Length: 168
Image 1 (cartoon, one colour):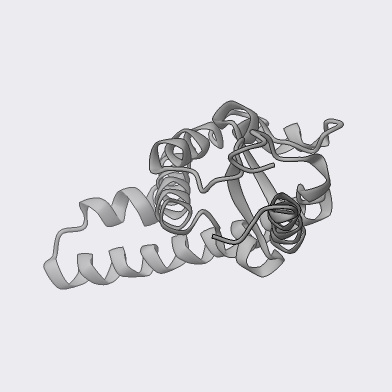
Image 2 (cartoon, rainbow, N blue to C red):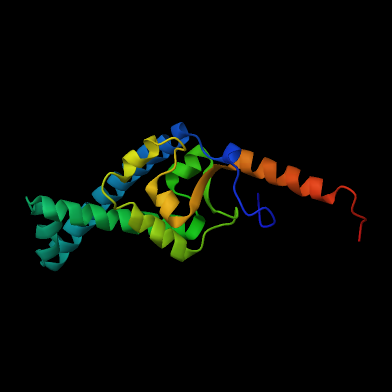
């Protein structure tokens, strides 16, 4: 399952329910981050007298500016938190994490690809498939695992490898 096995077994993957909880929690957090950023933009605009960004972010009635701002928040949120910890706020709450095919922590490039894939239209619906893996998982070759199951299996496999070995 780990470096010597070259795969993550299905029994340690996060359930669809946990994945959905991650989605909902992260959406709420991103909404909060967007709200806070809107307030900061308004305050900075008021203090500096420059309302160009404020007009685009807060006062704009066009859907395009809403999408651009939402994409900006999504990129900043996931690149920052998953890039640093391989977990989002939702994953902290549900005790899950992202791992590579080998069971290792993904590098920033992999997180970057994973985050960009979240922008694919209807990506959220890709979890309804049989294996419960989203397009941003399969394209970036990552998995979301239940930490308790993952670590327990890892300890068991490492213990089994030690059977019959002489102490050094």
